[in-house]
Image 1 (tube, rainbow, N blue to C red):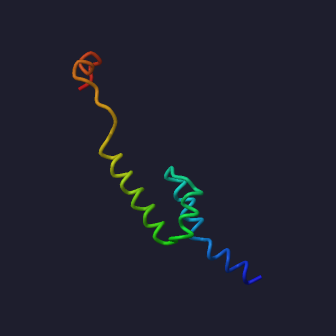
Image 2: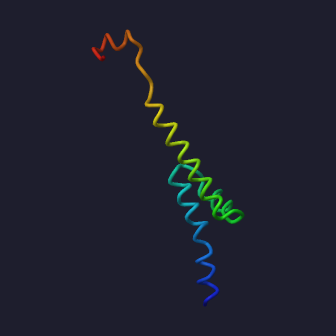
Image 3: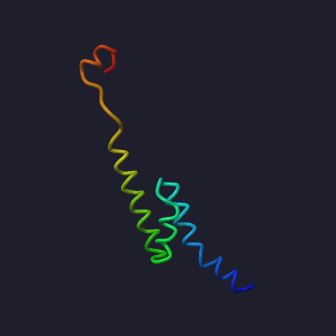
Length: 76
């Protein structure tokens, strides 16, 4: 019985990495298995990937309308 509890405790980083990866649009199973090889490092990599994605999406707010389209629609 203690072995099963230990196994469940040792799988926490893998589950966290998989769930976090899925929440940012990455593959759950890929990051779940990667975190077996590099448990803590894989979480750090996921955080860096998410931070870069968030930073890039803030800079790009979408497409801009051409000036003649803005004038036609009355948008400044």
